[in-house]
Image (cartoon, rainbow, N blue to C red):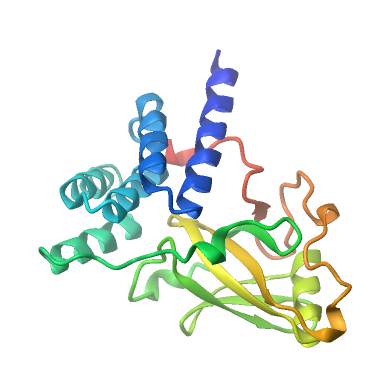
Amino acid sequence: MELKEKNDIFLLRKSAIKEASNQNWERAKQINLAILNQQKNNIETLNRLGIAYIKLGQKQNAIKCFSHVIKISPNNIISQKNLQKLHLAGDKKISNTIDKKYLVNDSSKSINLKFELNNKTSSLDNEIGAGDSLIIKHKEDSISIYKDKILLNVIKHTIAKRISKLIKLGNKYSCTVIGSNEKYIRVNIKEIFKSESTINIISFPEYLKPDYKVLSLNQNINHIYDSTTEGSEK
């Protein structure tokens, strides 16, 4: 019975992220509510629901979600920053739109990744929220992910090496946040420009997307839908 519940939560979580990625906020709201029916104190789900409420213009419901997270986890940065943003906005509409073109997943041009945050990211002035654009800087065998000028982490894996090589050959990639908590961040990396020299090279062939757990040499990084639980966030 417990195994079935975990599987149900995994599928619902996957659907919630997909609907948010496609900006189907009403559907995302309903799915996150369904998860909370089984795990009422799931912090990541509450934060996702709060963001969905913001997108739907339901500010009071968003405030309730983020306030509930603060009661469970007083130091939760995502909820703290969103509450601050909501209170500062007053009656004004909060603009935090995710550009759909950055999140729709073309299996050959886009990949969703989950990686551990650098422990120095507490210096961020603003929360890392869904829709934020991050910066990719490449080196010989790695890529570094930045929020403004703050390093989130360095990824050293086959995927990172491939992206680095293709950038050197002229390709360009966007990196967009689709979810985060205090420890991890989920991003969509998407090919947005292909150079003439890489015209016959696929950015993300299927063999790069197995069911792996730990990919990086220096931090945990997962394909976004590999994990079957949300760990301590229940």
